[in-house]
Amino acid sequence: QVQLVESGGGLVQPGGSLRLSCAASGNIGSISSMGWYRQTPGNKRELIARITSGGTPTYADSMKGRFTVSRDNAKNTTDLQINTLKPEDTAVYYCNANIRVADKLWSTLYWGQGTQVTVSS
Image 1 (cartoon, rainbow, N blue to C red):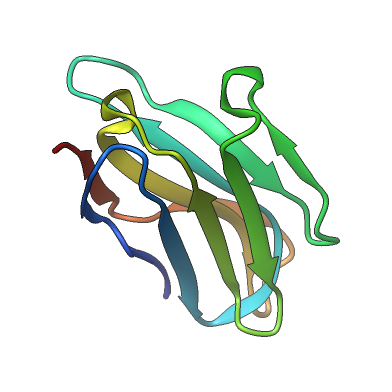
Image 2 (image 1 turned 30 degrees about the vertical axis):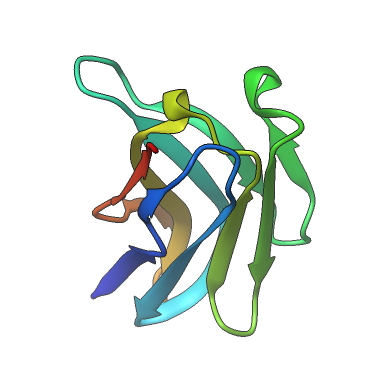
């Protein structure tokens, strides 16, 4: 079994910063790409950033500048640093990862359960 768990969400004031973490656990053989998305009520999940196993990040055009994605392959984790938070950043933030379970030949996309970020004064 493989599990992704996000943490670090909460209530933050406009202009503040937040660091979200996502940890993969279980019978993991390897992890290729990892990603961060967010979703607000009534809207579809939107991409924030992805990061390859080699550590190369890519960002959605609308997310460039205030978001920084990183990962630690030794710990099977990925972090998302969000700076200068705005009320419109309020959303549930999800991570995903392409994970090959040990002893399997194929990878499967796994999602975390999400963590709520609320930006409000």
